[in-house]
Length: 224
Image (cartoon, rainbow, N blue to C red; front, side, top):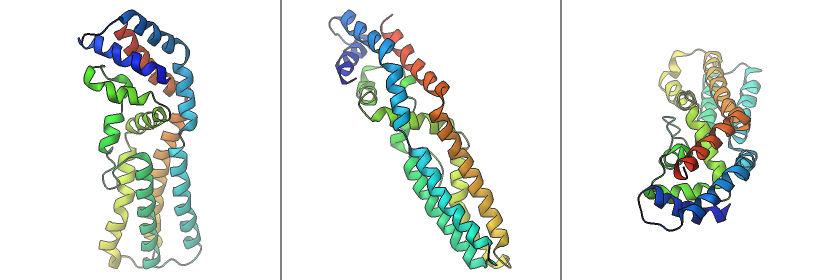
């Protein structure tokens, strides 16, 4: 795959109006890559990407803590401490998925990476596009595309993150921890469901094919 990079850079220069030599050989290499290795590289990247699955494991730990607490008569303070555990888990998930835990928004680097395959290729974008074709980084771009496509993930993450703050401000309004646990269950279930959607998307052949087709379209535009 690395052999494609110098070819891609030169082809991008041609497409952007920057003088370059021998466009035909460059395009021949790109088209060969498009028709042979591209889909396989995406499949490999999808298998390498375990971020969503690791995030689900983090959330399972909070769920187990909640089940233990529920078996007792949960105090307000005990339930509040569990919301702090959820906040810690949300921070961890946000870090894994490249999101801001307080807002659920994509972080700056993730915004840059997201949708790379669908960009109009310009000379100024050569570096980021070329980097996406190096080993391992394609898996990161797949994750960013899947996370960006999960429109409710950010809201679920922000909601779980804000729960501890909300309970801290209203602890005196609760007689025991049952209501707090119910709120935690709701937030946890919502976040877990959204992360599971990302995990399922990364495993879906249709998602990988959509991403592959965006790259194919870019190559077709360069080499038409």
